[in-house]
View 1 (cartoon, protein in one colour):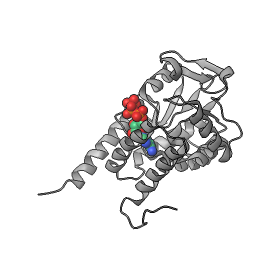
View 2: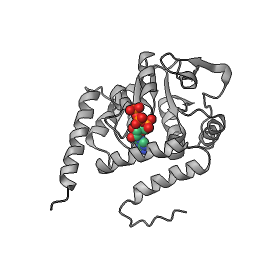
View 3: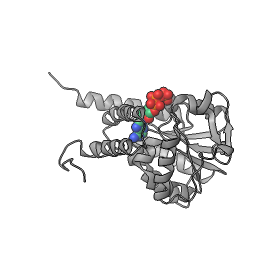
View 4: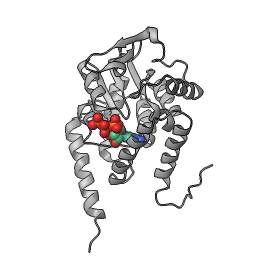
Length: 246
Ligand code: ATP
């Protein structure tokens, strides 16, 4: 039961924060993941905590790419597992994607906890846990370069919510198309991915699922850099609107 009153002006943001804290307490989220969430919250605040038309545009482009991919894979880390495990499984079923656990701060126990929560949410198969299946992608150091040979290694399209820039760059170098959810339009991941959904994954993932369910998606022109620039302008406008006037 949440202790946050519904009337609290930041209620939704605080519910999301609560999920992260619970995820930390149950061994899904790393300490660093809590901090990364804080960075995300700041941008969410500046974006008005809603899905912008630019995010919606990226969602449509992502749905088209996913529905037209040959071997899509969704990469899951602790934060994503704490925020939206059921939705990850739903997105995987809708788009016929594989699900792979892939952690920045590798930790076997945390990996097992993430697999458990995904299975509880309905996942039949979770990749990334069998050492016999490990393959290396180039351009990354040690543990971070390990991926599953039946998962990311083979994928043509990878969905990497809340990813670090190095890994996104390595995935691009390995020839993958990358879709990310990242609240920071200035992050390296946001700038490197093919499609960046600048929105809270907690809010936007259901919108992506609905879009993927549409049977006839049309390919609309999408330019990620231009879309990111439009998001930055949106933030600028929001800041001007909210600025205290002396
Ligand atoms: P980069 O290496 O890409 O420049 P970074 O080092 O800032 O990025 P990380 O801390 O590895 O990034 O990853 C966290 C990223 O995820 C941040 O850009 C943060 O804004 C974003 N983020 C955090 N929580 C959420 C969320 N709930 N939804 C979407 N994005 C989020």
